Length: 449
Image (cartoon, rainbow, N blue to C red):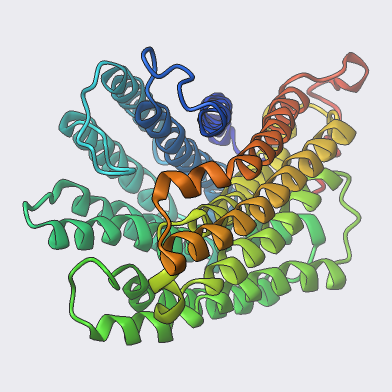
């Protein structure tokens, strides 16, 4: 680690991992409610657990992105952060807003819009925190060296923050409400977040493989172009059945087919960089997470997204467990695994320790990835059966749900494996064996510099 201000990332990573634990445990409880519907029905209803599960996911991923930016930007810009104090103020605002939102959910205070349930004061707090971040990180980059990695990262984070403004627009017309809602949700996860993913993945490949910066930069710009080209008009695949004009069925179908391309390019990029790389980096776990992230993202966001994105298919499949299968694998591959990759790479340097429990860390990768893959297959089969019974034959919804109980039980087992892997990851990252501790004056092999 070259710059003292990079240490602010450690606080972000710790908070992110705490919320990660909350998120997966909330998901496990929600999974059990599918098996036993009356579980906690009086104390903690399913809709509240689901809010906590999804909101914790969004917040901890954002904390990971912000922490990653604070870690890599000083190194890329070749200067200290503009203000460490502002970074801690931003983290404080985000955590207070998160705890306030959860407390509100538990007593029934929420706006009821999926992913955007936060009370108005929390939304304003998030906006203020985003403005603080943009000022801090932009002034750092503008005052130092400009690289493709920081350019792409800044573009993604600026667009991400600006799109949050649509979270404040809540019209009475349901069609308009859903349209603006997708401006946040889709344009985050299938456009701007892809830029953040590409930048962080590019940084990791640069550090872990030793390839020339020029090679990384060429790949990055191609990935960004395809992500924005496909992602913006690809929003149309959410406009099929919400009351918008029929031409969105064609626009959404055509441009959504191209959304596979940036994820395929990121997977190809990662493997080509490792193939061309000259560096034998000691942090093998970080490399595993980086390759795993790009691969699972291609299948989850790319292949599974394509399976039901054409309007002729989506007419029957939308809102079924096929959607859940795609959502789980896409989020895990594209963003969860990516954050865990940067945590795995950065934490040894931030804590001034050798690459820690790498075997446990890699075991957590296979547990989580295997569990999520099995969950995806189970939900895909469940969704296919649900589509046929409910949308083709016309059986009643609850009768269909009863028929899917065996799949929900298997999904719960897969979720238990994911939770075990997540807890193992947190343990392996934070708890370091004594014999691995090195003195501050020693060379740090984790840095690989």
